[in-house]
Length: 320
Length: 298
Image (tube, rainbow over all chains, first blue to last red; front, side, top):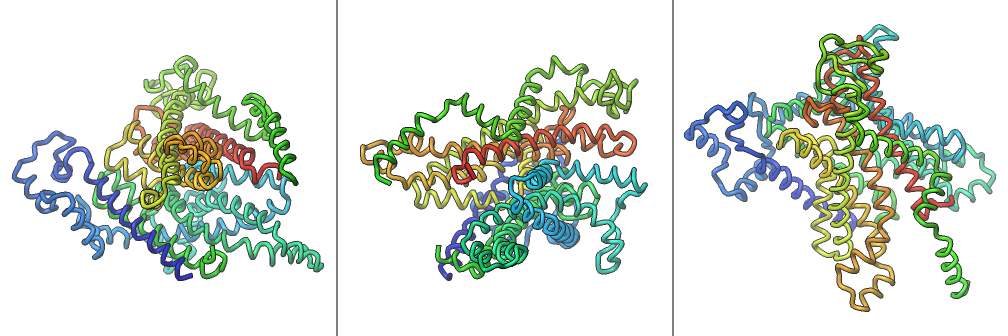
């Protein structure tokens, strides 16, 4: 077990380093000079005085060798200083503080919806394998993977408007703790859209896991003991299939973040995804850099935690 | 079972092994949904090729006399807020979808596949370095990575393609590497080594052919991913820039603003994206079922 943890740690640290190098390099290969972008020259072809450019460059440490710049940047990032906006008095952490909870709520709600829909659907599809029920479930889940969330989201708004003559609010209502109902009436729609897409993954994984478990010897034993089929499926098959499914849900955290970017955009939620898109459109480079570094590192760490927890819960992993 | 009968069985299997055409025929018979997927993808390919001939209107030229007209005989899918024919824009849009989708998958397939093969066979620290790098790329959500690259280089057809290829590469790499590791451990690779084949020859003539089927499966699945990512970037306004007609872009500007007054602007491009991705997914699923020996005949 300890070996398992050590190996995984030994893998994550270089991955985080590579990630930081990649993100740092991305910024350095940006065409044109960052300084002209900052001083507002560049696009308009406005002239930037040499003096101004030099001041900005030395302020940003751009007159140092690249390796020094990288180590500097990394050291600052490790101390928690991720830089700030080029245009406003706002750091990456300010933005995360302002938007993080919104994204978190969308992510949690849609995972909840996806589990409630996806797991039973996957179990049923596995039990009735290769019947029309299975085919229907498969079509529903591949459709969920295929329809872009920005389309299903727009259709949902269209549907709400034509059927109920009601539109989801286009401003942030209230946090869950202050006004749970008002908050949910806003967050349920994006979460439904994202949850459906996410449920598609979970249905497929559940079905595959269930088929795998249902082949095990203990299933035959349970049946031959005369247990009711319901008990066999729920207690023996699903219980054993669920662990890898929950682990994979964590792995899919990255998929969820991609989806959050889109639904926050459609339903005008002030979340992290929306902030990232704004920053990309404005080419607010340091904000983009900080946010993607944070997202990347959290994905790596979440996967590490899940792997380690998995090793603790499933003794076969550490033996392998 | 003794050895001769096993050999005979192998020989018999080889005699039965169908040619490419027969394989396709069998595939169509056994996996109708997958075959449908293949036909739809092929259909879009053809449509992209003949777009200038079949599209009745110029996709870019605006016509103030037909602003947001609902579907009619002269405009089967209606017109958008600038009076451009939606059907013609959809048809021209196939070109960008197909161009970005296929080229990003090709780039990602070549780089990811080669690195996977070489890494698996060579092993050691080189493989470790490649894998840690791929891990770090996989940690960035598809859209986030795409957004980052576009943020730095600015949106263009080339950059969007490169961005999506970057997203795809580690995913293909992982699959190819996994199967190449399994193959590298088999006796026929040892035999090739023993008779003095060069590393290059072993990797590309002996290991690579056996990794082809997982490669085909993952590439098809990634094609679906590429199409949806391209559309998402266009939707967010950072894809292939206007006035080029893109499916995602059609949903972003006009589709969103006029969703209530002009629903046809929303429905048509969405159906186009969904069918293309659905087709690629179905094809990928069917290929996996057909090519993965563990799933075959279940």
